[in-house]
Image (cartoon, rainbow, N blue to C red; front, side):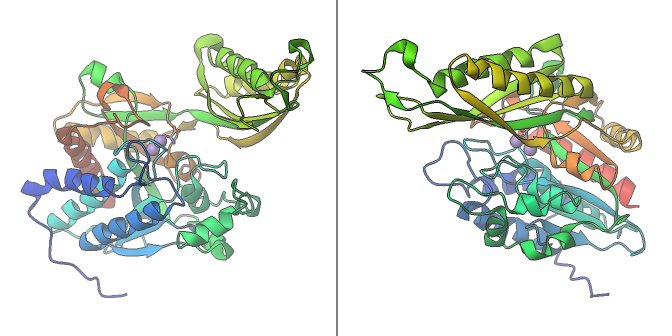
Length: 420
Ligand code: HGY
Ligand code: MN
Ligand code: MN
């Protein structure tokens, strides 16, 4: 076994509280120029550059670091009993366009800090601990989210790798540009039984913790997300000379479909639905829109609601545009079922929260996470810390340093329990 290169221990943990937040703010400096908020989308040069910092932070925390063929960064703290399945801590460091500084990075920085504190405790854990920065959790131009965690769970298919973005680049090419190796993608899959449990700290991205004046939540379940691309084919015409009753306007069809998607989201109060992306061709002020491409997504903790909504969406994509002489075509991008977090791990998280003097809420997550993919490889559980005003996926996203510290402490306490 390679000699473990125990770096000089970082500063004493009394200053530890500041370390995580300082790491978060350092990472937040690496963003795409000219973009709003703290934008660092996957497959961008800035994202590639930011991972050098993550790599460096992992190394300086005593982790042996590697990049797997899917571009995931994996830091290993070897336990004394190499035969035990690893404990995995992680999250992601890519953001949405116009995103904030905490969605994802909070979990990765806290995981690195948890390892620092385990090492500062001076006791080497029995169980090996992996810290993972999963590549590309957020949806991207290839239409698929959770790229790295899908690969780790063995769900990134050859077809996925052939998906192309608007510039014609394949996902395989994009992965290679991030230091991955698409030809060896199968090697990114965790060996069966390699991981014993996965814990993820994440910002709540909602307002329930803040409204309850609590600082920690243990996540009970994660909503399923169904995402579809809807292409509406109308006809380009002159905006001035074409009578209103002879138009086949793809934008107006998209507008009606979007309002119908909103209505689906309100159905029975069991879900939410959004059209967050709309592209028009030719997108000219004096041309009736020929083509509209939108991405619709909806979420629920109820499988039946999700599958019923699938059918209703398929129907409306045919019917609504047809009234306007527009043809609708639906392509599923992803359909994730709701994920239930491990009861055993939830009780470890509850005990760890109480160990540090916090009484956690129990909350379901309406946000999707890498934990959804990882849950097919091992039991998972998540901790939430508050998001100010419940805001996320926007520059206003914020979590106080003390709240980050409380989440980190709880994660470190749980990791210490589970790593043994
Ligand atoms: O969309 C989500 O729920 C996550 O933030 N990717
Ligand atoms: Mn997100
Ligand atoms: Mn996230």
